[in-house]
Length: 164
Image (tube, rainbow, N blue to C red; front, side, top):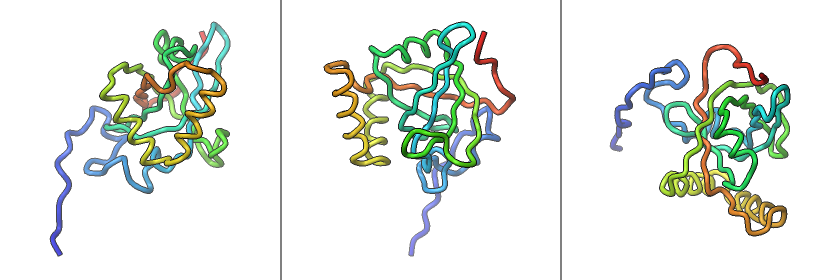
């Protein structure tokens, strides 16, 4: 039996969030095991909105989910990327025992990144991605599904003020 070692990883400046030498794509990883995430974002002064999303772990302790370029959520996150992330169950409700994570969302409009995230979603969720795409089609018609990717960088410090 031949033993292989994992390629060396360059530690992120917030290395305390991700153990060095591990991959985010394995059972037991926080974002790999999450059925969904609830993303809470500011929408107007003094008000917030929460939306469930299928989630995929990204490099350096970040996470990714897809958005539609025609949706209000993508526009709001592009304007103000502050988010609160909480792991959810398969119905999009907060998972029992989960806690909130604070972060900053960055909207990516790169087709290569989008395709990689879609492929990861197909690997992780299987047929559930087809159901999500179909539900989006019924609700929004010809509006594109998942043509943008939100990459969330988590912050280890205390909460960011979500309302203004």
